[in-house]
Image (cartoon, rainbow, N blue to C red):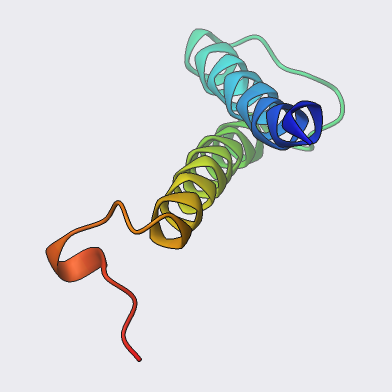
Length: 78
């Protein structure tokens, strides 16, 4: 079970790191031919970073709520 949980966290982490690479490449003018325009490359990179970090944060918040480790505003309302 721990291996599956680790993979669930590693894959979005890799996506977020790739998003950072895309943003950096867009800022320095290195164009990847997959994207039609360099601005689309930067926007896709930003979406990858935000999506990866949001997924990891949501996973950790869900786990902490399940174990009753959250306090205050992060408590699940019944």
